[in-house]
Image 1 (cartoon, rainbow, N blue to C red):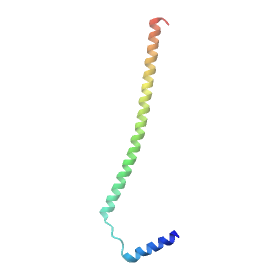
Image 2: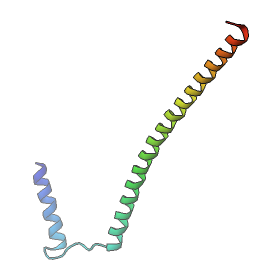
Image 3: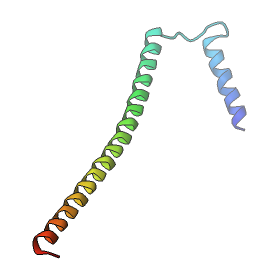
Image 4: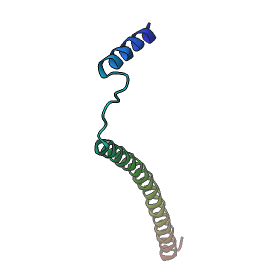
Length: 86
């Protein structure tokens, strides 16, 4: 059923524009369309990269803070033990 409708629509279009005529295409419009699609794709890829890098930066900073915290906690504990003779 859908194929029949497609064939009828295709025949109507061919009848309107004629068999030898091709629809006119503006080369600048095509070029502009390609440019827009490339720009969107590039922006989408760059957004994904930034998101991944932000996640990696978060985990690196988080681990550095944990290491600093553990170092300060151990140093403080050792100094308290030395000061009070524990």
